[in-house]
Image (tube, rainbow, N blue to C red):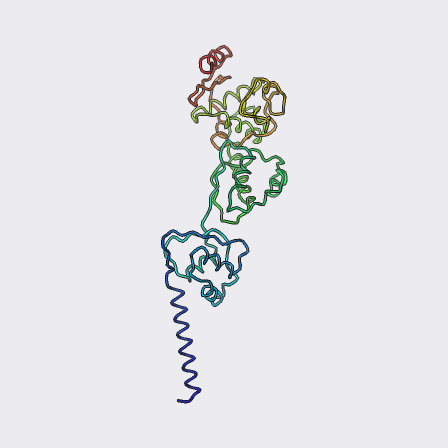
Amino acid sequence: MTPIKEFLLWMVFIILLLAGLATFYAVRPLPFSKLPYEFSLKQGSSLKSAARQMTQAGVLSGEWLFVLLARGLGKAAQIKPGNYQIETAVSPLQLLEMVSKGQVSQSQISIIEGHSFKQLRAALNAEPTLRHDTLSLSEAEIMQRIGAPEGRAEGMFFPDTYNFSSGNSDLTVLKRAYQLMQRNLQESWKNRAASLPLDTPYQALILASIVEKETGKASDRNMIAAVFINRLRKGMLLQTDPTVIYGMGDRFDGNLRKNDLLTDTPYNTYTRGGLPPTPIALPGLAAIQATLHPAQTSALYFVAKGDGSSYFSSSLTEHINAVNRYQK
């Protein structure tokens, strides 16, 4: 055998050996001590950086073999950021497929009925897996960014649980919640009861936010809505504490005093007739539906009974007696 043939044979042997080792590495399951296993890849991570993050997280035992595998298969530029969760044993090849296709696990955030927009922003800011693009934006700027024509954000986001991938913008969550609120509000408005003293879907949203804040027991919701609808029909003041509290803003210390009820603000429904200028909270679908389909009743007053429910009265005398009974 000539030296050249011997050299070529050795080269073929080495290539086959390396190919076998590479295949063995690529298809052999990674040794996880427990499953499921979670790890994250940062936004803007290169292949080397991603391999380093996975090694530090204990997913890989070393970086360079994974880097060579990704480059050999032409996936070096395809690594996607996000939160990942490994449910069953995977090989490096399957792991590469996962991170190159961005098969991320989903995070969740819940928007709560009755919360204010300020509370919603705080919840978004506290969510570590979101990208916080709204931190330096004003309320009006946020509404503009999500394509909302309204200048005010209060009450405009539908309470629900939203899934998102790590690194998504908080604006994405807000846009989805805004669009869902618009769909639910418009559909509910289209099917509303006849002869309501409400001229626009936005007015319904304002009243629904008050109903949301005033309802202690779900079974009372339609009756509470009816009381406010009846008051609007008669031109009576709504006289609802939650609007006063909202108008006080940071001045509210947890106690509502008589002087607060007498101090005029755009949201004081003891001093001003009709609806306040904006919603005071995020109403859920049940509050919207109750507002647009109130109970058939002559009730004009209600008072909390102390167990979450309310007592409803059609006359002031009956209401005063109920207040004396349940609150004094």
